[in-house]
Image (cartoon, rainbow, N blue to C red; front, side, top):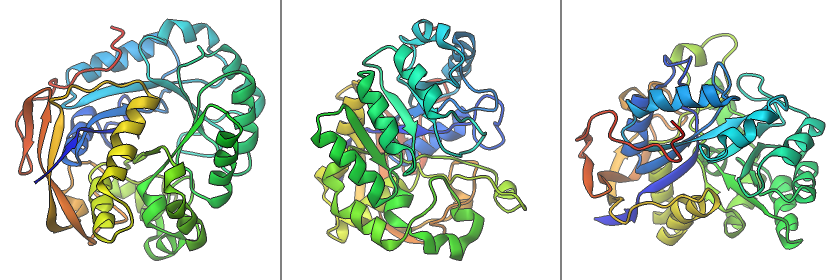
Length: 351
């Protein structure tokens, strides 16, 4: 049995409040634990975006009664809520800003982004959805305002090259990559249709190869767990996003078997990197035990997420989470949960 520290996913959409039919705190944290994640950080682009202290408090209050693993929260802004920044800084793990199209239309331009950077408390990460057309400008604005910029879900050679150059120039920038951008190419969108639709879009094989060849320049792996109902994904105007919490580790362990990365890489990308960037300290008695040789087939209908769809449905993977411990308590064993909703703790609880 392989023992790993409890994994940390800093990029998850749990959909509460407002869209609990897609996911809620119970189903989402169950999916996290089943996938080996003991700490997850939730994004602010809910049906009503989390842009005030009051909305943050309400979200934390709801979560406190429902979460099974530990959860932190990112704040949101469209550049119109600067007075809230200092009120929430002790209750959030960062602020997420969208500069390209994504679910919910929660988007700003670079002018608004600069104003946000000028007012956000320095040192608390600013996470950005910034693709190839704006990524260089976003990084430069972050540098000029002395902010820690985290580029989410890098998906192309051009984007990663821009980040590498910024790091070489001494800029305070980090980046993450998702499993779907590592393990899928644009071919999957053609083959699976809406089930493989996400933002950023899947890229050609050459971009995927570049990401793999420069894994050492990537700071974290983030699932960008973005559940939608199966009905939504199959309708005429399907939303972007795919679930990922329950398949991320197994995909990485399968890649270890294929000599594409090492167990040490998994620890760096799925624990040490997120812990450092988002200032998270996990109890030493928080860990997971994995059967790295167990072969299983993804059955989307049997996943704990409410999404019930996956671009990896029917794919055979190697490596299965068997036991999960949080602060010394066994919370999961052989696909069964051993604690009740409310066991998890809120990171930076502001209530």
